[in-house]
Image (tube, rainbow over all chains, first blue to last red; front, side, top):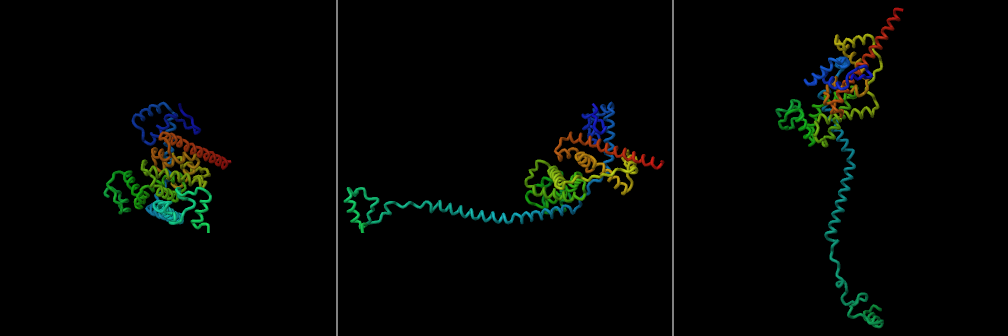
Length: 164
Length: 226
């Protein structure tokens, strides 16, 4: 079952994760027993394990990233403050415009509400109250005194002085 | 404040944290305070995680001159996004994901590959590395250590990107398999298998370089004899 990689490193694919655990001292006892029984009879896995151990020795030579030091946090916070200020400056014209729009909209809404509550619902003038006292209305005459013919109409016009 | 680390107590005297156990619990409280606008709490979070973020960014970029800038950007993004962080994951996991994304963005925008060394190894370098790998002779003195590191960086740069990152983050920067799985959004078993194969690949690069250098050495010795 040895898996032949392009590297010539031959480890059984189902044991690769176990081999990695073994290198990191993370094998539990049951897995360790299973693995050791396999490795006794598998030259490929033994060779791969040896090679992996060599890689660990090699990689230990690399230098880890340096500690940034206590000044780093202060630099970050200064950059954050600067970024927040920049954001404030960038959005300031939009914020100002938004306030104006909001104020105008509020005023318009208030006017609408006021109109709706008061002025919009003023009682409609009564038709009788609009009739001028003493002036007979030719266009809405009293049904009791409706003219019977054309002569009576002319007489009514003459009596109301509209014919002048 | 008795359970709060000294660094925290010293740097953020205005904070009145309840007694909490464990760094993760303290992180949760600091995140909560940061979400409410306490700058000192976020500064403490930076202080606590800056080393690991540097290690992660450095492990991916391998360009020391860029690490500081990208790390700052990571914390800036974390600050701007902290109100949306729901604390379902640990703060560190969330932060490391931001760091990984920031590294990818950086590499993509700059269109840079991590440092690549082209030169081959000299005979002397070969024998030195051989001694180190076989554990017979560790590098002596700062100059030899520095040179050996450079040789190693050359070999790392010859690996596929993913192999190099996994090996460096695990073996050099000290991230655990579990952490790598979370950061890189991979299955734990996948990380183990990829790591193991990457180990094989770097040793393959190493042996190829050794073979080339030995061949060159033999050829030049033959020329001298002739």
